[in-house]
Image: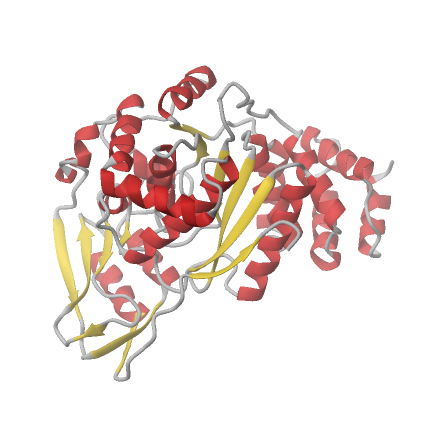
Length: 436
C-alpha cells in the first residue's frame, strides 16, 4: 500500500477501506507517514468528506493507536458525557455527583482547559487538596465504592488523534465534521464508556456556530457510536449566551454547589436534568426520561446529590467543607460591578467575547503553559430577555491584578440592550437518537 495512492483515491472521491484507514493511522502514529502526506489526506477529507463506514473505521483506528481504559471491573453500565464546549459550561461538576446519586456509575476522564476558562480538572482543583493523580486501580475502586471518580487524561490515550489534531490546527482542516466526530468519539470509546451522551452546542459561544453544522456533527457522532457498539444520544443545546451565570473556575464550582442545592441558574439546572435523564436511561437506572428526571429532581431536593458531591471530593483529597462554606474557595481581591448605561432589555450576550473577557482576568490559558488564576472571573446578573435599569449591574467582575479595564470594556461590547422586550432563546434545541 502506498500513501500517495490513498491520498489520490480520497482526493478523487473514493471510499477508503478499513485496511487502508488502519494503514494510514498506524503509519502516521509510528512516523512512517510524514506530516506533509497526512496534511494532504486531511485536506482531501475536508473537501470530499467520509462515508459513515469510513468515519467509524477512522474512529476505531485512532482508538487502537494507544492504550484503552478497561472499566469492566466497575459494576453497571458506564455512561460518559461529552460537551463540545462553551462558556460557563459547568455541567460535569453537577452531573457527575447528581447521576451517581441515583445509581449511575460515573468514571470520568477529564482534561485541563485551553481558552476562556479552565477545564473540569482546573475547576475541581479550585477545591483545596483535590487531586486527579490516581492510578487506574484506585480509580475503579472509587467508582465501585462511591459511584463517581474523575481522573486526568492518560498521555497514551488515542495518540493518533493528538498528533492528527495538532496537524489539522495548522493546516486549515479543523472544521471537518468527519475529523471532529472521529476525534471526539475515539477519546470517549478509548476511555471505556459503554454508552455516551453528547451535549452538542450551537450559537455564538460554541465551536459549531450554525445549527445545521451542530445537527450534522451530532448525527455523525451518534452514527459512529451505533456502528461501534456504543449506545449514543446527542442533545443540541444553545450557546448563544454563557450557560449559567458564572464564568471562571472557583466561581463555577460555587455555582455547581448552588445547583446541587436546587438554587442554581435555571438554564444550567435544566441542561443537567436533560443530560442526566439520558444518562440514567442509557444506564438502565430509569425506564424513560420522565422517570429519570423525577429521580434526579428528588436527589436534589433530598440532599442526596449534594452529599454525593461531598463524598466525591473527600475521596480524592478535597476539602468537602467548601460545599457548606464556599467562601473557603479561592476568592478574588476585588469585586467590581459593571452597571448598565441605559434602560431596556438584554437583547444579546456575545458568549465567546464574555469568555475572552474572563480570560483577560486570568481565568483561562492562552497557551498550554500559561498560568491560571482560579479565583477570578465574571458573574452575570442579567441574561437575554431580562429587563434592566440604567445603573443596575449587568455583571460583577472578580479580579486580582490584571485585565480589569480591558475585561470591563469587553463586557460592555458583548452585551446589547434594546428598548423592546426580547424573548429568551430556547436552551434545548434538538436531540439526535440512533436510527433517527
